[in-house]
Image 1 (spheres, rainbow, N blue to C red):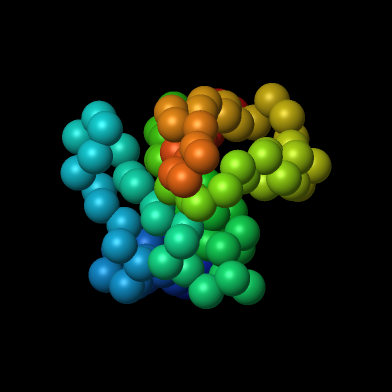
Image 2 (image 1 turned 90 degrees about the horizontal axis):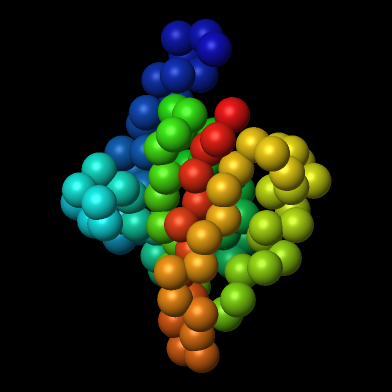
Length: 105
């Protein structure tokens, strides 16, 4: 990954943290939370993919949504590969859905 792309990802992560209510001090202490309900609809999936792509293998983040994000799981499997990520429901509605997504490879 080139310097400029790495720098853009770092800036994007900082911008997300500042503007989209991402809390880096969550379960566990190093895990990010990404509240999807606060993101403009056209930016939701791209933001999730950017966050996932910036992870190191073994790292995770939690998305918070107001509906089951199951279609996202299928999209991630198609675009990143079924064996490249983990998907764990932490809360399953009916009003709040939380999913821990991890990079496995």
